Image (tube, rainbow, N blue to C red; front, side, top):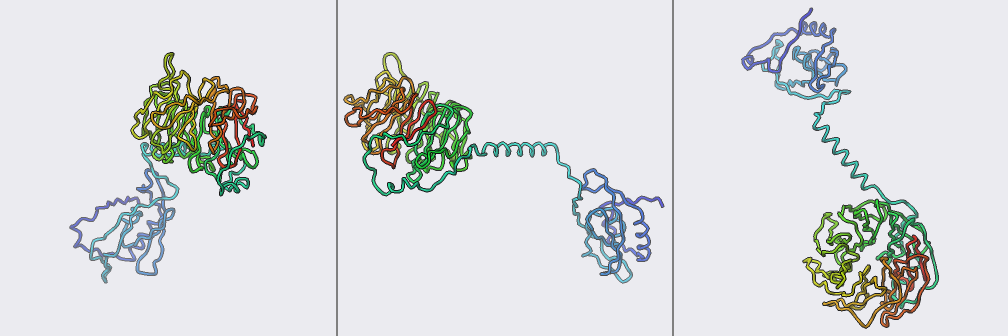
Length: 491
């Protein structure tokens, strides 16, 4: 019998509500049994254009009179046989018999009610529009790039320990004593393959066994410079020389900048990037604010100095200095003012060589602080007195007051060492009695702060020594570095 079944969702009109149908159960069973012999082909709405074949099978329903039909090859949806052939043509529709009542003569008194239900057919993928596919691919790519940037940039060494060193414990509860001249070499560490620009002890006293070093070999490292002298971790997140790096006040993160114009705030333990941004110019100096740990100052090869907030990764202040380069930044006590040293030197005067700024208003307080025609590669603050020192390329260090108008002390000049164009740093001892500086000859000079006389000279390196810093807890422990890539610990 070659007859096609055609049915529509709205084949039952409102005028058929009052009609009744007299169906013979035996006749229905015979017809359904014969139709189950031939497979029925149709397009499922969730198949989205893919032709599927289902085989109808009759099963006895012991719970009620009538016969049930199950589709093989699809989820087993049971359809009552008294819904005629509509269930065979639309097996994805779930018909409800809650409103149907069967009279004694086998007729229905109400119209059939059905509910549409979309069935997901196993093995057939739903169609996704091209625009949605492109958006999904773009999001996946962006996610992978973000995860790639946040991957650890640390080359593992020894485990970074946050336990207090046994050498430091006895000194934590006591007041810092007087500083003596270190004369003995304790450790020599030579893992950097390029010049080391700076070394800095961790500011948290309990973790001050860790020493940070930055190098022109595109890396910065953390060392255990008290117990073992070994490198704990190497961080290689920069693509060019790392000019400067600073510990955060909590000691768990490191802010670094270099000649790739990138700023990175790196988690010390995991090596992941907490904050990264392009600064748009090469960076030569970074300083965290003294009382606001989320704010730092950035200066470099630009006439502008920027204040960043790491919480929203944005520049919050811009200080326009009208110079070519900022060499160093120094916050004065309380953080309301800060100083910048620049390369602004003319033939007749040296105004703008050191500039004082109001931090909040970004206004210049003074640019007539240092009048001699020498640039100042580094600035350092006295720990106990209202004074700061500027290292100059005139082979001497000048003393200034931190009170306005920041006058220079003409009676004291710390001279005798050579700078010769290197960015040689200088620093006071924790008790403020000694002033230490490196030199282009590789020597370390110790000056008496009050008399400005040289107390001792230490022949420490074969090449220019550009950084020397006292340990904040251990008396008379000094870290130095040179242009050959060596780091030495003295006591």
